[in-house]
Length: 317
Image (cartoon, rainbow, N blue to C red):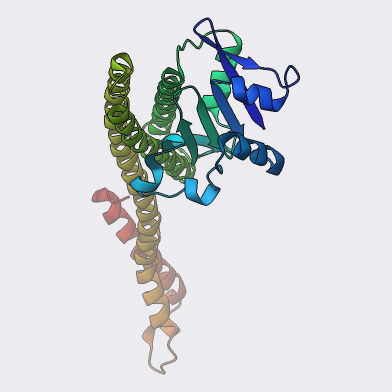
């Protein structure tokens, strides 16, 4: 799908698909957003750009030379964005082509940042006076969304912290599962932030003639640095809760093993008595004694109760 947007009175407005032919919309657009374009749409975009759109494999390259470069088509930036599928976060790369008069974005999946930006554009809330300003607005929206997601992770960590440290008879295995998901999400966010640092730094170097945009980019960089510190704090808290959870699980397992060990020690002396009187020797005085059987039973009871009372006295039970 190809969506086009135009600048109207310093705001971005989406152009409906049924209002103009695609070729006209592409020629008049300030922002062209290509979301999973089909073969026909790719051919029209390639013809419009007089060049080919980047392939998915090229977009996913991690070398700086493949992600940030300038050529005849404009300034190219391939930046990681946070995506979500089936309740789990992931990273997907969006390819930006910044030209003097327009911005072109190419992506393979739906992203919350772009969806929210479209909703804001429909309400006339996205102010911009150029394609360069619009691109920086997208990065501001990206950082804001990452900050909101970090806040959600922090709230979930507080719930897990209560589950692990305060709630009695809590499901610790479920807590480990939640912590693993939160750690994975936090890692994906940190990766996006690190990539945003590289992307914005590259843009600062190539927007030297736009003083106001450079200042906006520096503000974005300061926000990213703050969020990077927050992700480090979350990593530390997740690791602490993970260690605590594993420690509590080990304590519970030790308690179970302790009970079995004490039970084995308690039943060992009665077993010894029973084994002695179960031997088939000819000369065993107690065999002919009328009170031999009650005596053996009483001896086994005493042999079993004595270790139990000793353990209670030592507060081992």
